[in-house]
Image (cartoon, rainbow, N blue to C red; front, side, top):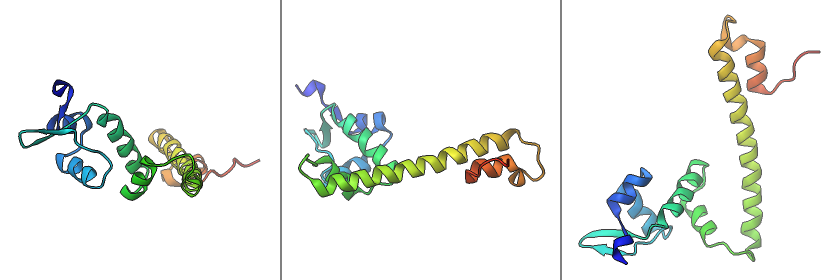
Length: 133
């Protein structure tokens, strides 16, 4: 069974996380080591999925504490589920802003308006301003 375990260095290499981050997440209870191979921690392969979720949530602005609560959530956790729905709405708004920014940057990359930031199409994309009628 130990053949299927992943050494901390292998987990770090596959996830792009530093071993110190893995130890931190372990200390916070987000992941757990399966054991040790000498002095090195070993993990079950499913830790990679858990870490992908953690990295994604951290990238979206979730705190380690919020992720910890989410990882142990049960369907009966009404307050947590309400908070999750609110965060989903916040993410929808953030995605909308980022999409507008992406679209404006794509336009700016090919725009010949002087200066680019005064271009009506650029301003529309950034501010989601409707075109004039």
